[in-house]
Image (cartoon, rainbow, N blue to C red; front, side, top):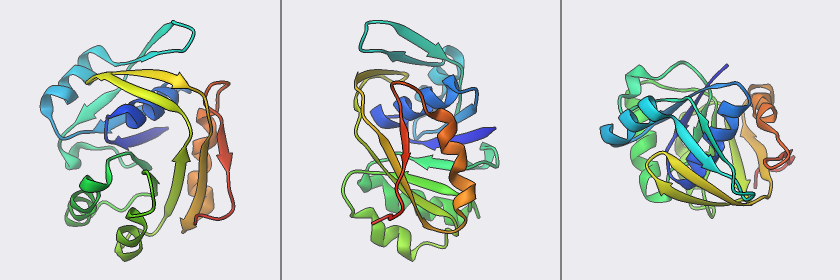
Length: 175
């Protein structure tokens, strides 16, 4: 199964690494071609708390039209949300989308969007971006997700990434 991760900062890289480890085909949607090239050629790298290092294959692009038809996980900062939603609308991209942001400022933007299938998530993990392709997993917590609108079944794939150090938990209320 394919999944698109918009944003390759600490949380995007962390989430993408666990989906890749679960056997999913991960494609990152990033702003800079240098980062896309590095991810394509060297993969994404995750340092574990125990000191181990794991590397996973992934794709990356800066061109929204080159992304697979797949669910999205949006892990961009709030300041980039409006531009991303506008780009998605202009490109007529309307996949199931899981938004992973701090705070609730993005709720209003998402409510106004034409996206049909939307879920929100909170992340309780400690993660640090080391470079354009590397994340350090510093603290284990939950990825808690809840469907905001649309078909809940379209988000069941999230459970595939559940691992000892990356539990995915369902919550019935998106707010």
